[in-house]
Length: 131
Image (tube, rainbow, N blue to C red; front, side, top):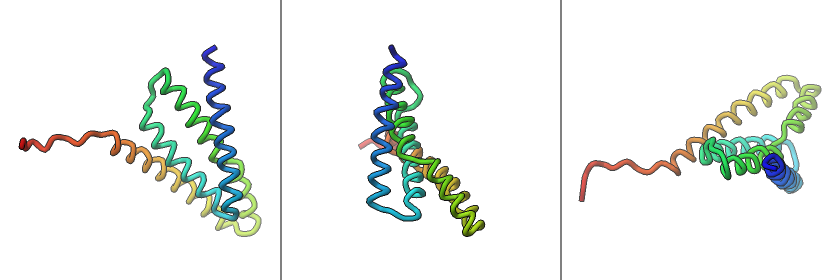
């Protein structure tokens, strides 16, 4: 029964994520939209994972629903791959540059999300001076 709950969380999150990506792609059509969506998704995933940690129970279900489902559906490796192939036939160097930029920016965005989550969840240390 627990697996059904996990699968339901992933399916619901995925449906919402795919819808959000499609709506954003229609609102902002053109080259670069996939890049922006994937970078935003990487940032949000870093933020989410650092905030929730790797516990069990409701945190695990949230990670599955929001991380695997929603952000997995929101980001798109398939469209990214298609864009690389289409670019390759027109401009191979640009295709390689786009691939590398996506990878580097995605890792940087995920690290940025992790750092932001740490900053938001860490309490300031006492300065040692009592009033």
